[in-house]
Amino acid sequence: MKQDWEIKKLIEVCEEVFAGGDVPKGNSSKMETNAFNIPIFSNGEKNKGLYGYTNVARVTKPSITISARGTIGYSEIRKEAFYPAIRLIVVIPNTDILELSFLKHVISSIDFIHSGSSIPQLTVPMIKEYPIPLPPLPEQKRIVAILDKAFASIAKAKANAEQNLKNAKELFESYLQGVFENKGEGWEEKKLGEVCHVKGGKRLPKGHKLTSEDTGLPYIRARDLKQETVLVEQTLFLKPETQNLIKNYTVKAGDVYITIVGVNIGDVGTIPAKMAGANLTENAAKIIIKNSISNIYLVKWLTSETSRRNIIRATMAAAQGKLALTRIKDLPIFYPPPEIQDEILTKINNLSLETKKLKTIYQQKIDDLEELKKSVLQKAFNGELTEKEIAL
Image 1 (cartoon, rainbow, N blue to C red):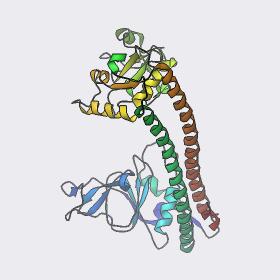
Image 2: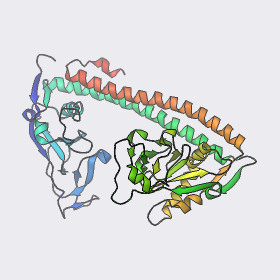
Image 3: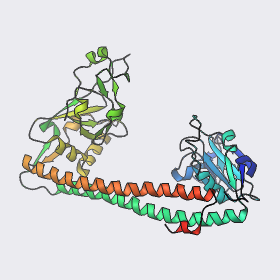
Image 4: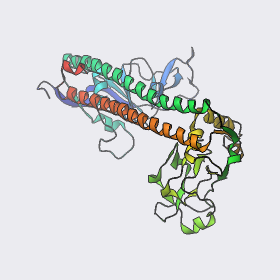
């Protein structure tokens, strides 16, 4: 750090540091109106934390807000008058010694989550004590100018990598959809119930609970079932007396599962060998194939855009937003002879491998850019930042 820099506590370089309060009852609106035109900001990144509007301005000076809960440490510059909601911390800098944008960059460089506190929230007393590097104002402005240019370059590179990542995903999905739209000779169309058995799982008996102790009797919950993935690392288990009461609701390796309620409704995959014999939740169903259809082909069909649309329609038709077993049985399935299924799956697997490679490359680029951003910030507040940081 340069000799003419100081280290100050945040409270020493700010006019005020305080937390927001409850949204004014009767004096707010979700939409902006003539009567309510002062924004209310809360925790969260969506819409930069915009919660609604009021007619009361608690903050009128340029400031920075910091999320104390949820997305801990998320910060935004606020130059307009606003009302801060509860669990949103407001920092108003002393602009005679501290430039607003410089402080924003300093706050962005702080790792609040791993700052040594075990409490999953920030508090005003905690925030006030954070050490802040304080170079002279001209130096602050120079650093801000360099950081703004550097971050603009990083943002552009990151946007390109994210678009490439999206393109890689869409390439695979487009090919998968094309397979099922361009059906050849010998394809059949049936209802799922005609070619498969569809059976539900079973909830825990009243008064019984799962245990983290490995009893050798795993229980698969809906939260463990993702699209083509079973999260075996978070498995919970049944006690022997519980499993004896629901022993008829187990799965075998290779069975196809489908979730029937919740935010991930319609997610499908196959049961891995490690989970053979596990009991299945009532919030999912197992699909057992009874004719010449590959279980992997069935999964690919159920993840296709055509099938996803059918699943959404079947769910929306239910009063409680549940994918009932009868509706699963009525889902259509298009399938070719076994040898064509094998050809399709070989092509899909090859493309999937290439797509995964691309995803890995682009995700690594995104991660590297985030690390570069942290590195640039660290150099800035160690007094080591130069114009070269712009050339990214």
